[in-house]
Length: 191
Picture 1 (cartoon, rainbow, N blue to C red):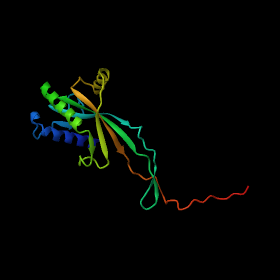
Picture 2 (tube, rainbow, N blue to C red):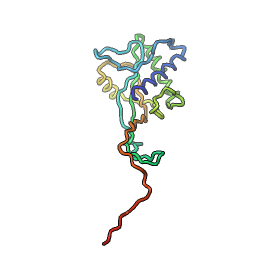
Picture 3 (tube, rainbow, N blue to C red):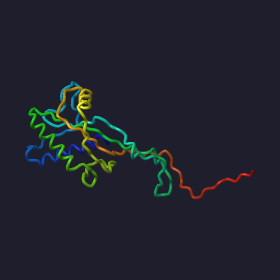
Picture 4 (cartoon, rainbow, N blue to C red):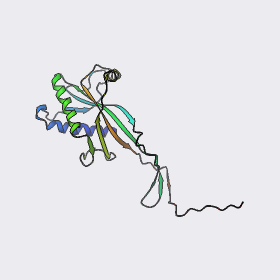
């Protein structure tokens, strides 16, 4: 689901790029879901933007602990609580022409500024498990940026970091299925 969600974001950004005449985007992909670097330490994408996940974190503020659910037939099922995730991703520009890279990176920033909430109503290709995805700019300082690019194992490329909030994962495996209570009986004891 994580891959499908990020791939959908890439397609939405690509569609936006096509509408911008100054970018001269034809049929070639200007943004792809990819590692920034391949296994040999070379740029995985030449002449384009790469969108790559850099962190996944559990959203604990709105964490649901509900594990029992009443079904339409009246039975009560028990499942593990859902997990809500925040996805941190980077969009990095690798272009031969530096100015062209900045134009594409700016266009990606404009896209998320104009449209930062994704639902199945406004994004039909969003995976069916995703009800709502909120994308926000995530600022990192120079030190964090230095650490990030060190971990990625390369020299800095013009880039931006975003957080996609509240991706919910619920496998739906039922641990227990019990009929609903019809009455509660408390045994009597004599003292």
